[in-house]
Length: 183
Image (cartoon, one colour):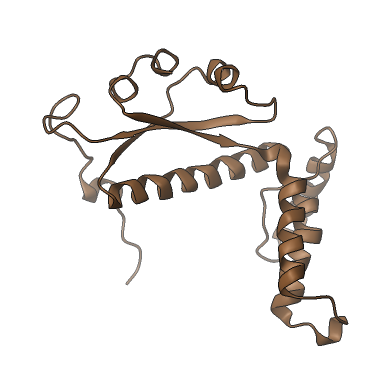
């Protein structure tokens, strides 16, 4: 794998590499699995006997997710986008409804999972390094991933050398990346 990560030191010196993969193509089965679990939690009953929470969560997986993720050659996505633009003139609305928007959403979600992984690894004494620099096509082939899968990032992990890979650890100063809004 290290050559596929352009022989970055983080890849060559790591004890392990974890590949984070997005699978936008699985939205139907994932929505169905979540809806099945919710239906077990909340058995069917007349709508007037359902809590608001119950109705909202069932509608989310049975109506909203299929409507947001479904597209037909990009045409339905543009139709949704135009409807969102018009509705957005009058009230706040979810605007990421085209196929390219959903791809971004899926990658952001995967990035959050990778962040959770890295924080968890730090909590048990391991260091991690996220790497976006890789030949994703060759990584997919090496791992025999299906066509709909996309590599989000590769994270190396292991025990850090006291002297570091390049030297002392560097971080951008906090005040350069943090902006406080309001009081």
